[in-house]
Amino acid sequence: MGKNRLEAFSDGVLAIIITIMVLELKIPEEPGIESLLLILPTFLSYILSFIYVGIYWNNHHHLLHTLQKVTGPVLWANHHLLFWLSLVPFASGWMGANPAATVPAALYGVVLLMASIAYNVLQKLIINTEQGNSTLKQAIGNDTKGKISMLAYLIASGLAIIQPWIAQALYVILALLWLIPDRRIERMLYSTEKDGKPRK
Image 1 (cartoon, rainbow, N blue to C red):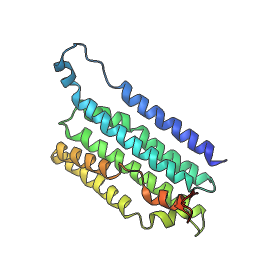
Image 2 (image 1 turned 135 degrees about the vertical axis):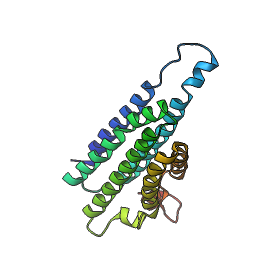
Image 3 (image 1 turned 45 degrees about the vertical axis):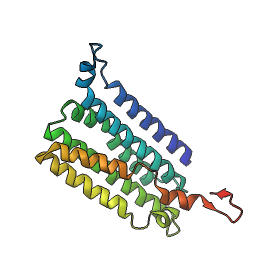
Image 4 (image 1 turned 60 degrees about the horizontal axis):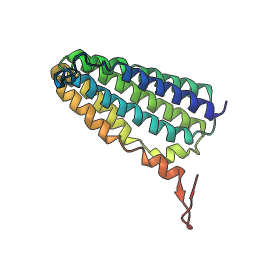
């Protein structure tokens, strides 16, 4: 199977995830500002989750550009990633509806942690398919940024039990950390020749 089909399927799933999230935003029954303020936590949770899904889409796009061979393990690793991302609307909606509650904030962090682990597994399997000549391996190196993020999600999930707003602040900081698409892969894929023309 070509990677174009894998990419198209993944894009479709991520588009549905975003659609589900926006459908969770309830229209206020009253036309006043007070009604909007009541759904503000849910809206802020939606914005954060939209950013996270967008981050994964951007980096997943770059990731698949390094893929030369689609194997069975790569397919299942990709499904594994999409599974955890498909839980974002549920975790996001629950946290938004209960912004001061500990368990929803902790669950949101667990979902982000598992998605991060799944992405890391997918990266490793793509590297393994290249058998020592991996563009991805050259681009990400030891992936220190990814490992720090996984640790931070784990810490944030634990802190949510103590104080949810601290965990939520960490989720925002981590989203900002990844807001710009992964330049490491982009630089490796699109190197510039002496004439200034980009090439893959």
